[in-house]
Length: 230
Ligand code: HEM
Image (cartoon, rainbow, N blue to C red):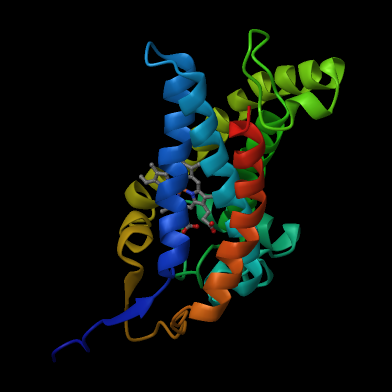
């Protein structure tokens, strides 16, 4: 008998996917322009402000986005995350597809959003002890700015650690659980078999999208103006 055809189910909306891949570019760009021979403080700050914009957008989208983008849908109790981890690591692991982030993946998303957010926020107050500073570095006094600069330099190591764990988890899903998480994060959809009843996340509301973009754009433009005004 012929098996029923797979359905294509929308998992991640387009704004969330654009957020994700632009965040990858912003974080990589900020690192390259600080830690390699392509060093440029101006470009480092542009990438940093882009990361700030993206994180504020994601916070707003966590309330206004489609179901799988909303914090309320993917932040589960720690207990659920731990039992999911146990199931995942058991030798006979057979996990059902999750509705967006798994209970554990939800916490991973919060860690990535939170660590990059704190990095971008501290950069706004940091200085390079020569002549450049983040947009608000001149408003908090030298001592506070120096302390936040030290935090900014240290904190990036935690982002690298979070990214390594993130990529290792994706590889684990692929190799051990035979689940491809990357394609849905690129194209937005996944194949759902006959017994898989998780509903489509739906289409984003254009009005809510404009609101989330404005929520992120206003503080970013203010920072940009403060930074670029002599
Ligand atoms: C600078 C590096 C990266 C950062 C900062 C980052 C950040 C994030 C964040 C914040 C999320 C949560 C999405 C959300 O709900 O907003 C996420 C999820 C995800 N990321 Fe990344 N990411 C990075 C690199 C990558 C790379 C290189 C890949 C693919 C090879 C990847 C694949 C994914 C996938 C598949 C998910 C969804 C996981 C799930 O189903 O729960 N990420 N990432």
